[in-house]
Amino acid sequence: MSSASDSGSAEVIRIVSRSSPMALAQVERVRTELAALRPGIRTEVVPVTTSGDRWMGDLSKLGGKGAFTKEVDATLLAGEADLAVHCIKDVPADRPLPAGTVFAAYLKRDDIRDAVIHPGGLTLDEMPAGTRIGTSSVRRVAQLAITHPHVECVPMRGNANRRLEKLDAGECDALMLAVSGLERIGRTDRISEILPVDTMCPPIGAGVLGLQCREDDTETIEAVAGLGDAAVWKEITAERMLLHVLQGHCNSPSRATPGPNATAASPCAPGSSAPTARRSWTPTNGRAPWTRPPWAHRSRWHCSVRAPARSSTRSRTEAASRTEAARPAPSRPQAPVGPYRARSRRHTARAAWWPDMPWTPGPGGVAEEQR
Ligand SMILES: NCc1[nH]cc(CCC(=O)O)c1CC(=O)O
Image (cartoon, rainbow, N blue to C red):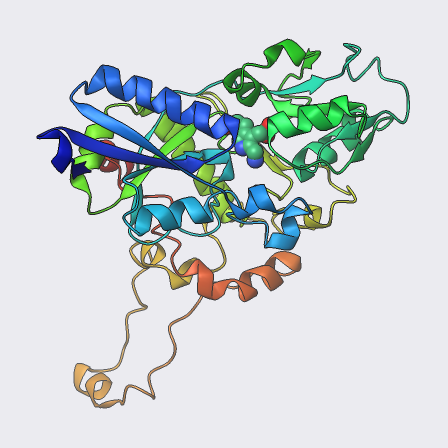
């Protein structure tokens, strides 16, 4: 937060976000809620264009990760803004938040479901074979392949307003978009069908906005923390932990049903043609992978629960006289076999920060509860 020298004692929070109509609507929600909570604080908007907005090709070719968040994070870290508003769905969970930033709050959750938009008002079941659904989402493509194999998915990028224009221009016959996003841009009138979550399981983080601050900016963190919803904080922490263990991201076919009663999650579309569908976590070692990921021995988190070293029968002196190099390497858990093992090996370095990501400290005592 910064004090505006020109307006006396008034405090200003500069809010950075993508510049799409949906993102700007999200910022307006934050400004309205903040105005009610902290009427003394002024807000300014800093819109930025992200690489995800600029690149109209396949998102996975951009590295697929953080395409909608990188430039926003950079603006926050550069001190050109004090608060970033992100769709949690777009924030990678297979890596930590950019160093020096934290989430101060997750807002109350919106609708988590996906909608179908067909100009003639048809539902998926009513659509003739070969109907072209405009979506580039691996998750949507994979699930449609199971439930509605008669329709065809065609790549479709651009912000939601732009996609609606492309639909009207005949680039596809129907669209799939998040209900929450359509609510934000005021276009729920275009919805022809809302899909239940067991037909189209939502992505991790669906319908949730996160408020990200610099971690040393306690003033802003304290100012906006009150906008957060405690139940959503728990849901998002659990969901992002899951995505982290799967090493998934917004362009991998992982799905989770969020909500207080939902704990189930699965990689979608086994056997689907989506290349990342191979990233199934089906345990090959008879153990649920999230209980102890194969790289967990690298982490402080796991160290703290590691079994004590086997007691030695050698005398203390004998043990002490042994050189460091001669000491046997600490035993490590056997990695599971199969593709999961190959992957975990490759990601060992990145996995070293495992304990930091999901346990991002939160304000208002939530962090205490998490530990
Ligand atoms: N990557 C675009 C994006 N990021 C978040 C949402 C929807 C809103 C949300 O779930 O928060 C959308 C649009 C869409 O999927 O239709």
